[in-house]
Length: 220
Image (tube, rainbow, N blue to C red; front, side, top):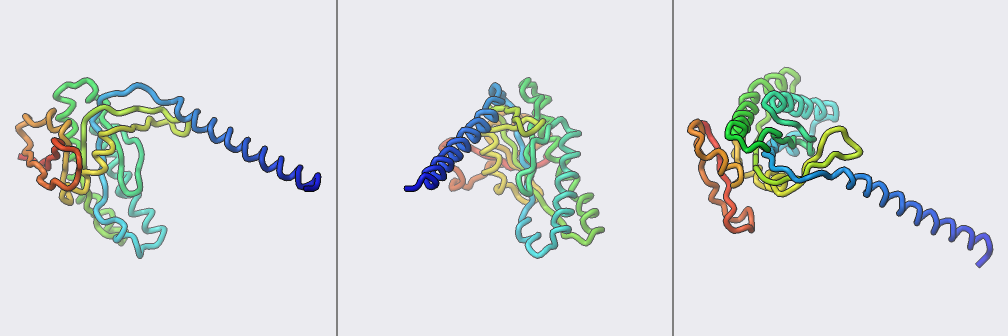
């Protein structure tokens, strides 16, 4: 091997090591911002069939389609005591800080927010129609439990992780279009609220965890 080749090899190896160190530092920096576990109610609202709907739309129209949906519902969420964490594709992830108090009124507000979002649907569809865009339907899923709240170095908004977030994502498709589904944790907090009716989801193939139940919520 020539001196030139040796120099090139050592330089490449050094660059690779340096890159690995920088990458680890970046990951460590993100992980530094994890804070304590808290009990919150978490929600996800997701458009039904958006992939097929937007498949043949221009980029500008797709952007406007999602903008009307995401901004419209983010406003409703914020007005009803929740904090929007982020959008995940065509869905919004949010949580309710007041539910940490475990006060019954805070959980009643969660269901109030869900149905306020559903009531927003006709207004959103009017806006979409004015711009020549297709109407939308969406589903809402909520669960209560322990989540890890993280203040990330890349964002000024807290992120959340944990089982309630995962369960919300998995169960969302069980809600009918224009409907609400909740998990066992939230059900135990709201089951006695007389304004709402709860029907147990009977599909046993969705989750492997025995004993975990989900419920469709409707206004009584």
